[in-house]
Length: 308
Image (cartoon, rainbow, N blue to C red):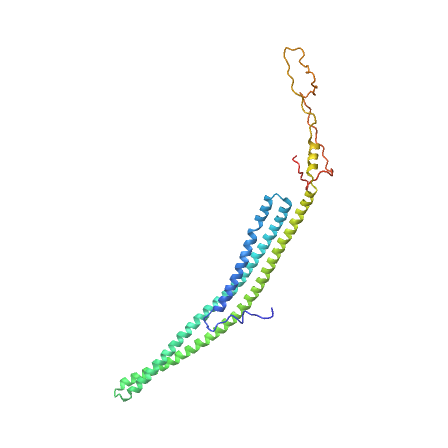
């Protein structure tokens, strides 16, 4: 920053006016509001995004979102700390400016009151002089003496009010110079804060966008691995694999024959009927063979498309 813009552009011809200072404060408040809104956005969008991914049961992508959520919470914390730091810095300057504003207004009022008193005393002296001039032909010496005493008193009052008025004007000028100096310092401090805020806010947004962009790239890479595995999936081979692993036999059960209790040939077989195997008591199911290296069967990250 080669030159300061605040201290040269926020003045007013009215000594009581704080329009320039108020304009700077309003702008700084708006900037602080922007930081607060972005901070709330970061806090709101962290766990929500991770939970949405969890609902999709994509563990790998969910883990990346959790990491992103942690990064966003950290960025939100930094934003909050930065905002509070600037708030404290501004508070110190604002307290000083509030004090000089009150001092300036109070001294200006005292000066104007002293001016009114001085002008009134001058009018009183002028009236006393005119009264003495009009009473030059009076023969009553007591009345003339009273007029002269009043004139002398009014002259003394004018001198006293004039000194008081001049003293208040001098004091007001000192207060004005002090206020002007503090106003310049405040402008420079506020401008430095504003430059810092814009730079910090811009970098925070830049980092946030980069994090979101990287998250998209990472998620797409994980999804691409799933797509590659799905490209190798064969419906026919998966069915054949399931049949070979879980088959229980290739011969259906024999028909149930009628057996007469009184017939001596209970186990006779009707002509033309083949005798089926004795399945009254079946043996245990065969143990499925596992073939993890079977090239005809595809797995997606240890997840089988077959219902085990």
